[in-house]
Image (cartoon, rainbow over all chains, first blue to last red; front, side):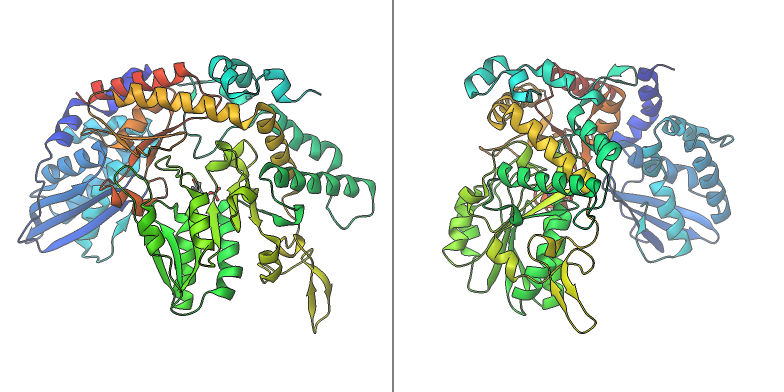
Length: 148
Length: 423
Ligand SMILES: Cc1ncc(COP(=O)(O)O)c(C=O)c1O
């Protein structure tokens, strides 16, 4: 793989698109869970808001600022987990993490666009920040998640 | 052996402008000659740490090969040689910053430890409840946190001098913050995030006219500007070896002898005592009072070699050449559409902090890295400063005298590439 390719592999069109126009990018007024995530290394800082419907994620939004990878990841995560149960979301996170660490994540749909992250080990934290924050929101933890 | 200055054959500013032989300089730095991701390395992260000329690397390894021994305690030949080399390095530092005496030079691990030393000794003794320590908005965390810790312990107050949008200290405001309760002023000489050169001499005059001592964080300044602590009149001056072409793990605290004499020791242990009984310990004299335990002998000697190298090239020539590079960078990169420069002080050196519209600095750093270009992306350990500018981070290129115009052009091309990826 040429180096140009690895950069293009990282910044795939779908990622750039979600960075430019993030989906579900707002505070959720009727959220019943939320959590704050912070990546001190590059200053990524975001909040994830969740409204549960029974055991399922009824609605999910995020808000904050960060690099393209963290923002696109958060945006695509909100789309991927809406309607999923807590266990399903957890399982998806596990597979997503395997993918960005260079392993096999199985079929991940659109999230497969993040496979290029594995070539950039320092960016793994950017890609997983939103997921860590979601997990913390689902667990109902109070403290800020930090990727350090 | 001829000095680096002889080899390069430059000494005056004028000749530097027209004939600084950067290729010859580059030959002295082995690390520069490598490829990263198939591209020639372009190292523009010199504010984080600088590379080492061969003479420094060889001096350190020669010390371990021939002279290695503990100092100030052995009677044998190797110990004598080690002691002489270590104390010789102290004299080199003394002359380099024009301190009055070698005993005013304390070897520490780096700028951070130097500032902590002053906070924990001078600060703890002099600062009481309700007293104030005055810093600026552009300080590195290492010139903020030690004072915060001190103020918390003593119920004292940390005051912060504001800056303008160019990143210049507002001197009149700063002076107004110097009051009867101000026990110390601590300012950065050259800002690592903005490149601003602070008018430290004026600041010292202002503070001294009110009887307030001044500490200067010289971590960035010493590699780029001629520093004369007696001309500045400052009471303390701190810097790190690794940012001035020397080894990591060694740094310097300069303090005026009369202040150092009155300060309690920093750490207790061997070397810092002249006699110990279980009832009472008599502290050693300066500088040993502040150098408890076996110091970083080899790297202190390596720092001496780095200073020798830098003064051989000549700081005037270095400053002149680096100013040209920075002007070229400011011009070419500042002209790229969508670029915003952070830190546009009228007096600045080495640092080009920038943002690209709509692109996070971390993404800039990643793409440039794949082009072989090393810059820093982040808050640069100056989070309050980033907040002042309303940004989470910046991308920062910092130049050294071993960088070339072509490397600046490579950075500009890299930035265009970043913009293309995000177009
Ligand atoms: C202005 C300034 N002060 C202090 C420091 C801390 O230096 P060190 O980490 O070598 O102790 C730095 C290094 O980044 C700096 O740039």
